[in-house]
Length: 444
Image (tube, one colour):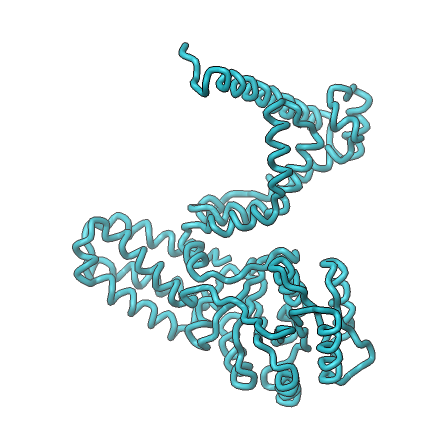
């Protein structure tokens, strides 16, 4: 996400870091490059202009001129202004009702139904008991799509097939939620153009009936500057409380995210960063600003790891490694745990300097390598995974054929695994020796 903007800002910062002293004359080119980078990223031109004015005003101040590292100081000013532009702080959901209600609204194809499922999963992780309500009575298969998502997430979905009265569906769903102790209700509404007044008025009537604490506009990040117009029209009709920005992973420019808060005054509350149900994050302006500037987002990476990794299982695996009992079955589990964190590209992108590392790197090869290793191990029997020493030539030929690789590739995997096992055994012996000697390394 923000690949274009991030790359151009990195180039600007290389020049800024080399400056020994800041003056209006020697930063004018850098400031102009920042403005062009913002405009190229499809940021609203008024937003870009005001942003540059604020940066310039602070950058030529006395405090910056006297700083030890003036170039770094300007980068900090740009970072802080980006945070302000994106909304200063994370705006959480306000769900005080019983049940608390959320309406998702937006254009056709913006990702409302998928976002409804992702939001329900996120609320469930927070200890809530969500209910998904299918209020899209116009799009064919919309209700079936929501039902499928509900089954995958193991969450209830309220559906009234054949019913065309959205208000009746809403009334019955609220009764169902109270009866079944569901304390968060998510209404997935039909997509509509902001200029389609009759359908927009249907949303107004739905809002007046359910009185939702949250009315979230779901916007495709690739909509660009038009997203600002869409948000403005929906806000006038419904008084939005926030925005969900979808497909942010597929939009290299990301100008919509930088423009929305400044123009509409409505905070971005969540972002969709992939197709999977877990690819859905609360929007943190400071973290996003750090990502854009290539500083990484280690906090989000740690949170993602904490959600994906079972601590008890990790301790058990550590013990097996120390004892040299790590098997191919355990290795397969570790590969799958890594896959839960997301793609290699998304993981590297969260590391400081990750955006620079990704430039020119072909991580798709590594992803394919992981899948090939997983395929080879899956082609083995449970006994072969636990005791790879029994893999004779005939077994290896069978496994290679079953996983679509050559015997040489399989041998390479097994050799690397043997080396890893030997290293683990040596480390385990070293740790035991250190414990016996009171934790002090022996003198040679």
